[in-house]
Image 1 (cartoon, helix red, strand yellow):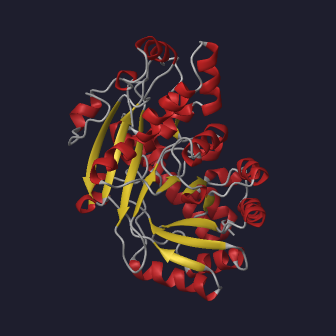
Image 2 (cartoon, one colour):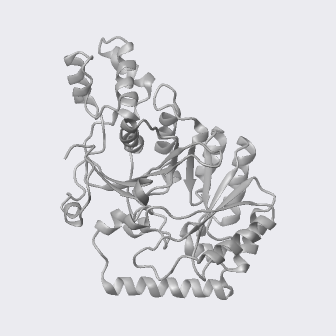
Image 3 (tube, rainbow, N blue to C red):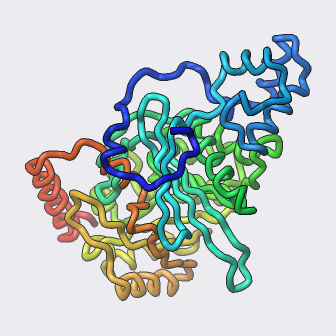
Length: 402
């Protein structure tokens, strides 16, 4: 199946995909800095303008093979083939949802690992321009282990390379181009914790915002984190214009310990202080993401605690009902609870938006499709996990999460 094959997906076909194996040692071309590629050309006696030609094929024309770069000399194409991969996505299958407004891609990498990206289309309305937002992955699996997140069920598999991250966006550019559309926004909110793969994520974001490469404005790129304080501080030192999104989910430390286990290493107060320093350094408003779970973190007390934590900060809060996830005993908050929570935050002067979930029928929450293809845990393991989550959340709600 060629890299851009689009088809209906079947569980049998995905389960037949090979498990993780040997890696292709050639780096992906999309991860190459233009100056480094130009130096590579000069070392081989090629003119520097050849690097610009290659970049044009890669970023503007969407080439996925060196054979497609027909204006290059054959000997140069052979040299590039030996040194690099034109595309790091071996196979991609796409599932549509929401009457075509949402599409989810399952990408197979060279070692058989599966990662996901999602296209979300927002038609022009109320004076707002049309947006085509692509949500991309930065890791295969995730080490953070948030219990309401499907990726957490996979565990951590490996970091993605710079090109493997950027090639997800290149895929959607090729997908949209025949329709006369383009990618307008990129969010690093797919599988994995971006700031635990910070150097490659920063390199990918640089490629996407570089006018010589993808050319997307930095303010149209969002980097998400569950609270990796050193990564936030690394960003602050660089002072980029990317939007920083923090997966907050709870203001009370004990409850956040349950929902975001990384909180035990980087407590919520330190996370918000680090994010505020980023906002102060860049002038960019922080986006705080809050997945609301029925009876767990959507109580009046939790709304009041969150308002107290964020009041007076340069912040925007996104409230999101939890996506149903296998092996988790929780349900999404009902609409009336979302509305009440939002009103408490707005009364505290915090800009707040209630988001609706996209692509529920195809499992568009990050990691859901890949998790479905992984080996299912035993019923006993599922039972123990549910009991532990119920016990820990009950303790937090009873006061242990203050």
